[in-house]
Image (tube, rainbow, N blue to C red; front, side, top):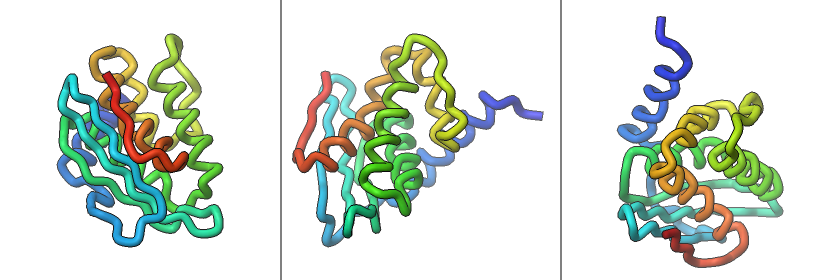
Length: 147
């Protein structure tokens, strides 16, 4: 029987190999481009927000398995959320990825699979890039660069 860590690794690999919502979103109301020039990860987050609700979300990107799987997981997590709920999710996930101690991941569902990234400091930026790009899109900033 696989342990939780193995299941999480399988989930991340599945999202990398079979990304969800990987497409350009026509008629997006919010968009941002994220770039990490040190490792080559790039991601574009597209949102359609109507009356404060995310009615569609997608991403386009290139990079490592962690950044692309994270973007895929992000898009699934945002389905049918309000922009306020997306902001709250951003805060919770960023805390999970950057906290020195383990956080409660119960409310995060499949996003909890990303918690183990915290143990690999060189990979944290890979996992945070899509989330920082989401935040930029929500704030109507067109681009972010991490280093």
